[in-house]
Image 1 (cartoon, helix red, strand yellow):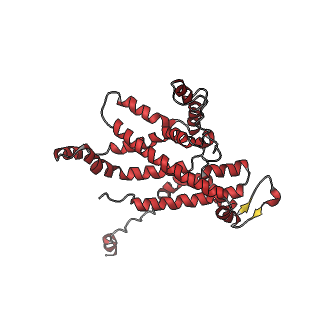
Image 2 (cartoon, rainbow, N blue to C red; image 1 turned 135 degrees about the vertical axis):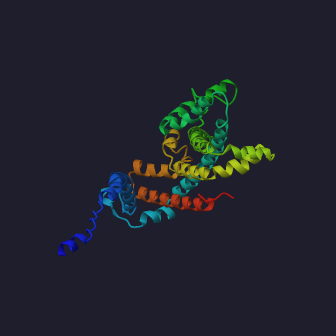
Image 3 (spheres, rainbow, N blue to C red; image 1 turned 45 degrees about the vertical axis):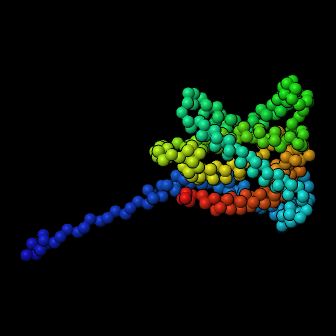
Length: 311
């Protein structure tokens, strides 16, 4: 009887193995080195700038170094007219550059999106300036603007203008000359992003619009532009931040001159830190510039309704 009861007893359920925690931790382990590098190369410099903005730090005058509190910020807003001049010029520079780059970039993207003979070569020529560094771009345009061997010399040979004209040393022409130089390199950025987004527009929409009798202008306004909305918003925001922080091209072309009329806020910060060695005040200027960019970016994204549905 006892033996029969023992045989009839159901077997014990198999013991469940504990799930290994390694697969769940593996993604974090893989991204760990990248996170550490970002903290080292991004977070630490940003924190250092905030720290030095509260300091009086000049290696050439160590006896004056020490905690300054908010004195640097008070000086920026109450006793530094150069700050407001450079901020106004920075806003003008960003507005003109980004607006013109968007306009010409959109036009080029629409052109190279069409089917024509040699389209691949045309696209390569349009996009190639973006591969050139800012310093090399500046060097190219410095040679083009040279009063002895540049464009002005050839124009003078044709009876246009006078010999010895230097567009980069004249306050009435230096801004336009710098704008043209930066347009040459900045327009391909918009053309690349907009062209990539144009590739995803369904041709059925244009065919349906043609059947309904819509003109090319109406197709562009009601089909193309709404589809490009997010790409335009993102590209203009990125380019505005880059143009605001543009130092290499203006520094090489004009050095902020003549008479400081082409000095942007980042260029003023670079001169304050590198030339004057006033790293504490330069850090405070950098902090103010960071706050201005952050505020303007948030407002721009909110007003443009980035990522929202197109109506």
